[in-house]
Amino acid sequence: MTAPKFKQMKQAYGFDDVAIVPGDITVNPEQTDVSLQLGNITLDIPIVASAMDGVTDVNFAILMSKLGGLAVLHLEGVQTRYDNPAEVLNEIANSPNEKVTALMQKIYSAPIKENLIGERIRAIKKAGAVCAATVMPTNTKKYAQLIVEAGADLLFVQSTVTTTRHVSKSYEGLVFSKLVKSVPIPVVVGNCVSYSACLDLMKEGVSGVLVGVGPGAACTSREVLGVGVPQITATIDCAAARNTYLKDTGRYVPIITDGGFKKGGDVCKAIAAGADGVMLGSTFAQAIESPGHGYHWGMSTPNPVLPRGTRIKVGTSVPLQQILFGPTSVTNGTQNFVGAIRTAMGFCGASTIREMHNAEMVIAPSITTEGKSWQLSGPNTRA
Image (cartoon, rainbow, N blue to C red; front, side, top):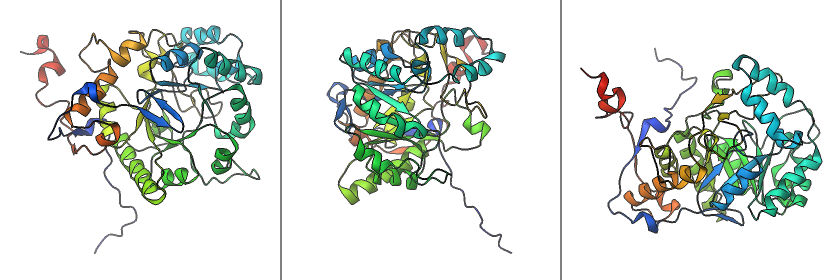
């Protein structure tokens, strides 16, 4: 007797499950174009720093912009709740593990000061930097015009899971098509992991979509809720939606894979899987210039009812410029991310990010362990 097919599951893959196949031709890495276009904003490198309080403050956003990337300022975090956020960040960093979540729930219960939204944005713009700011869908309609008037260049709207169809008690929730028409700056929305959700968001007229639910180093949504899709599969599915939308409309909407990265190889795999850019959090929390004092936590960590994140200690390593461009002082792929992207593109014969999307990939769970016994165990532990 044949069993009924209630749920037919497909295999999903993360960064460690796949590998990129080198191309039949190669390109000089220095001749590759790794730029990322978001609406009318062009970034020299396809790397975005996440809107986490332990990663991005005003100074970090300015530095990231000067280096060719983008850092997103969290407008519902400590930067807009406190006149001197550095003191609050120091308090979070010095809190013992058993007390830090309760402390953050208290800290983030302070009201948002609308005057600080404008002050933080203007401080970034005054330095000549590109300013990107993020808010949750709940507060987007409330703060969107204020963000625009302060001079922000991009508006990010982020939540753990974002869809265009949402059931709630409110008369009318956030309608992205109306938002896009009401603000004169590019709107980037996230997060999603499926073909259909990504396609729906693109149909709303957004300028970019963030891909990833729960992969971040400080995120516990997958443990708390059991929700998420490994990043390679999520990226491939959302890239397919982007390609469908391009074919139907002629408009190209970039996708940014958000979270789960440990090393340069992961970033290269995300791009080969179809990403136009990547968003990094814990990697940048380790930079000397980051405001978290060697700690990193996600937006949902201080949730007053159901925290879906945790504070993690990432330590402080090297300057941001070294993380992005080297020269690297380690061999584990955690520095010179841009160099890794350019070199991988060169090996695959890709001159642009979009050409890199055509690179062949294989399912290869042994890619990081094959022949690496000395690296995995260390020479001093072998008999």
